[in-house]
Amino acid sequence: MIPLSKSKFKYIKSLHLKKNRLQEGKFIVEGDKSVKEFLDSDFNVKEVVATSEFYGEVDNHLLPSAVFLVTSKELAGLGQFKSNNAALAVVQIKEISPPRIAENEIVLAVDGINDPGNLGTIIRIADWFGICKILLSPESVEVYNPKVVSATKGSLTRVMVFYTNLLEQLTKYKGVIYAADLDGQDLRDVKPIESGIILIGGETHGISKSLLQHNTRKITVKGKGGAESLNLAVATGIICHHLLR
Image 1 (cartoon, rainbow, N blue to C red):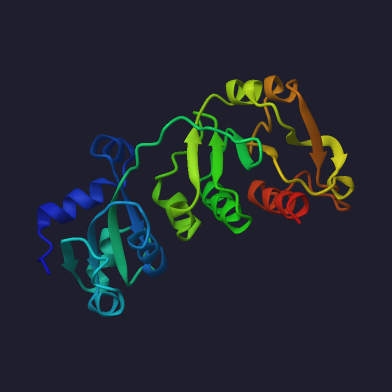
Image 2 (image 1 turned 60 degrees about the horizontal axis):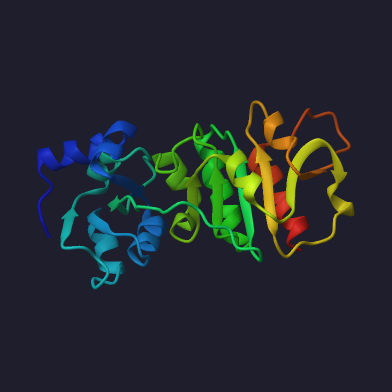
């Protein structure tokens, strides 16, 4: 165990900023369950800051060489979430190759997602339904944003997220693209699928016209009330449930 120095405290705090995460190639994971998920994954966990309770619970063979013991109060001051009274990890950002989509797999694509909570929840939804790849347009919120990582509840260790030119990806894709659109076919009338791309629009503008004009099959979640639309993550969950049932 190593004492947490002021310089190390300052360094970890700096990783709350996107520019520092990109410069250092590292991001922060907070919370008991999430830290354990990353320790037990193929991500490279560089450092762990933990309370004595967490240290006593975790398999020490999984811990990195740099482990810092702190109090719950010190831990709360180090992270973004005051409810975290267990651990925080500094994790290496993975180098990811351009996406390759097989003909027999199901992939989720999201055009312009801005809300970190929505992205984190969508990653968790993908994990629940066994979807291993998510394609995001380049302007989307950063996947290593602490709020995104927290909302995934560890699912980021099993779902690969790619920032890519969606039009380029859809153009070369030979399978069926299911696009969520208010003018689409009632989802309840669509048969379950075994392969394809599920395309969802962002919170503000939905799916861009250039993508909708591509060879897509439009689908929609029909409602009965007066709400203008569904929350993005909620709609994604409903669509995945129906198409993968």
